[in-house]
Length: 438
Ligand code: SF4
Ligand code: SF4
Image 1: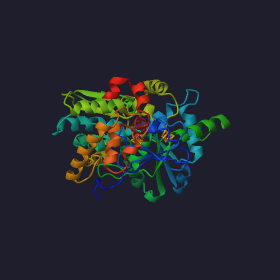
Image 2: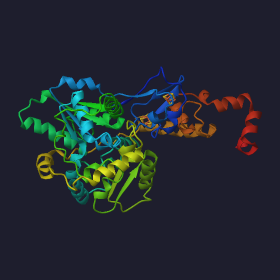
Image 3: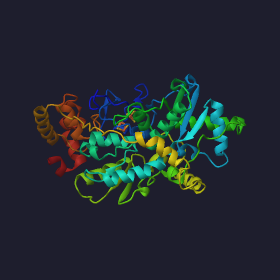
């Protein structure tokens, strides 16, 4: 099935029972993928990019993350947990790395390894890629899956500029899968699990882009695992588990910085910029589209504020996490100890295929019908009050006009027009004569 037709996998779900229809989520959604219908938030699956902005603002926790049950690990004899440095950096210093590792072993994981081991070998690969890139620059990082989806749906003309190299997480997962295989372990006995700081990574693992198939068997919610580890520590103290070592714990200072803002860009030769948080990323891409920004070789784009430190499933304060990462980095070697071995094993599978654009079809797939609808929507916009109040269940008056021409709403949805018809005098009072006349 081609990527254009394959539905997006979504890691976020709206619990309609809990939703109170407050429309907070709708107002922050960067792709206008939400509407409030019959008093409940409703998601457009082709437009949602799993960025989690809606999750952050819901006052009643009606937006849920669909992760894998941790009990799934027991389906496998070998249970490898891939741990991002962000996970360790959430704990205060008194809960040492050894203590965390011990608790994770006690929970049933048989091997642990750090995710960002895969970052070191990417540095040279990205630099080579950027240098040899024949298309329009900047090359856009493929690290943040929410941004990759944003580009697919909202900036499809940039899809060709997305770097065709898999992220560190997948490099590390591929490496260890091959290690098990090399050591004669049947692959059906191996369960590879990842602790995720966000929903977008769940969606990306379940439905990767670039013709790639992830070897990761399950994704565990970082917030839940954090609470479990913390509770175990509070109840039992540090674990005496004798096997509590990280396998190949050769994380470098390059690797540990990778999930933080600038962690990728700082390693790139040429002019490389790091942009974080969804509004900034969108603003930057719009400027790039309008050719206001030129001469950039590489763009690191991360959907969350302070990159993965600000992921929606991260429990601790993002500034404190960043501070702890800096501290941990001081004790790490500059380079990955397994670099050459890693390079030899991984070099073949780092490239991926192009990421397909999936431009939002707002009006109709047929261009003639789409143009007619667009024209009609523009006429309707002139009849709407242009105040983007959201009371109609659409995020803006423009979005309501689009919904009306696509038969998803009617003019009756505009409560201001209703009120206007009911009490023009009152509206004039609120808006003032000038605006009212206009
Ligand atoms: S996850 Fe992001 S794109 Fe999807 S509905 Fe929520 S805010 Fe919109
Ligand atoms: S933020 Fe969205 S999902 Fe949450 S209660 Fe309000 S409308 Fe419902």
